[in-house]
Amino acid sequence: MEASPTRDLAHDGNPTRFIPFELTFEILSRLPAKPLIRFQSVSKLWFSIIRSKDFADSFLIRSKTRPRLLFSFQHFDSRQRFIFSAPEHHNNNNDEEEEKSSSTVIARHDMTISDLVYDINTRPVNGLVCCTRKLDSSSSSIAVCNPTTRQILKLPDQEHFVFTLGSQQQEWRKVEIVQGDPYTSFKGGICINGAIYYVVLHKKIARFDVRSEKMEFIKAPEDEEDLEINAFCWTLINHKGRLGGINYRYFYHMRAWIQEEEESWNNMTGVVTSEWGDLLREISLYSTGEIHTGEVLLVPYRLESSKPFSVFYYDMIRESFRSGQVLGIADYEFRRRFHGFGKRNRGMRCFPGHIENIMFF
Image (cartoon, rainbow, N blue to C red):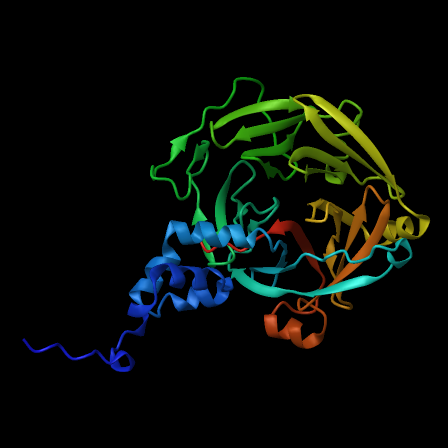
């Protein structure tokens, strides 16, 4: 019996056949999100890997080590909303004398939403962004946006439903709401350990447990007497896995509350130097939470056309401030014309803790 000829690997026509599946999976999982989106068209194998739940989960784990800032602002003339992202600023200043120094990151344009009435008021969760669309004075619609894949998924209106992405049970389920007085949410929420928290009226914080799909209400800190009046200067934070709140109403000090038990809170106060306090008065900042260093993020309300955009960080423990410049959004005329959002000042939304997620809807 004649032996079969040796196959010429160089002319096989499918070199990926000889690369182990596990190695292909590992190589792809280390690539950035943008080329992965393009590489879906390389082969059926690559498409199936990139679209698989296991791959999306593996990529998400790596992404969580690279948190980003998410920026959103609108273009009134063309009725578009732009979404950018940039790496969170690292704090390399160990000397208090260097706290005035500024680090720089470069922003990247992720996607454009063509419908201007969609707004972003809450922090992203696992790379997904909640967009609200006001229909009229009594109704609105909600959509989930993935800036990495540039997809938008509209959610059901009116009643409360939940859909678990990636689960085997692919259906919408109605959420049971606890009995009680009607409530109004007036402050963007935060997700901590599988539960979503947001501030509501009457000094309460709503808590929705994603696993049990149950909603309950907890009391806000008793010391925060003006919670409802100063809601726009009060934001929820994730402090080392625990629910917390920051009050930045006062320019020369900040107050923080950390939940110890179900309705027990500890508070701390950080002093702001007169120089930084004067700057807070001048710029008009707001906070959307903490970054990976544990510092409180403070963001200007406006994206000005005349100068580069900067954000600020406050360390409650060291009682120190620092600034960080963000290039690539509106730092010079060419970029403004290139991205097409004109010369006028814009309202800016900025959220910490954003990550890339290649999960497809």
